[in-house]
Amino acid sequence: MVDEEPVEFQVAVPYGHIAGKVWRAGAPCAVLCLHGWQDNAGTFDHLAPLLPRHLCLVAADFPGHGYSSHRPRGVSDSFVEYLVSIDQLVQHFGWSQVVIMGHSMGGAAGMLYAGARPSLVHSLVLLDALKPIHVEPAKLPARTAAALDAVAQIERKLSGPKPSYTHEELLQRAMKSHEMSVGELLQSCSEFILCEVDGSHHVHLVAPERVSPHIASFLAQDKIPHNNIGNGGKSDDDASIVSKILRNNFCHTARL
Image (cartoon, rainbow, N blue to C red; front, side, top):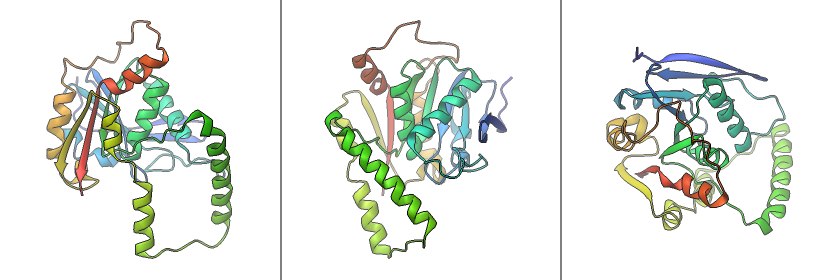
């Protein structure tokens, strides 16, 4: 029996719970839906009803977002912590394989999780997603030290007066942080599927009918596994991990 109406859930974690909602709980193919920064599971409310009936859509609120508990004070809000949350959800639902659909920051977290758990993630659907930053091994120590300094700086800022910026300053900061584009990713992946539609960063929410046909085609029932299909016990070496992450990707980017 497939439940068409979303059902809310909570998954217990050490600091409280992860909240979310499920569409079509009886459907055979699991899709974990990950929202963007300062968003919540509701970002998929308009898109979910337009997707095929064989997809069980599980949208979760990341910690500190939506109805999920906040992490304890002093715990850094890092991508590693997001991967832990994804892993907790996968273990809770008992998935042997899953499709991840992520918007913005959720897409970046999904890509990183696919790299860490390549046998668990069958495909990625990326909606105007951020691209994880990669660092050359030789530069990693300096990058780590800079990250530690940044955390200390943020803690000092949180305990003092809040900074303020003009509109132009905020615009320049945002543009600088988005210098790397999807073009770089396309150059390094010959099998990356890119679909462009008219709309803004949240086109999947305000005009889901522009996005849903592309996702439905990519996640056709004969292209993705049921929940109980794993990798058959095959191991993954470094080369196969990379190819597996990039083999079945869907990327929707919106023209601003």
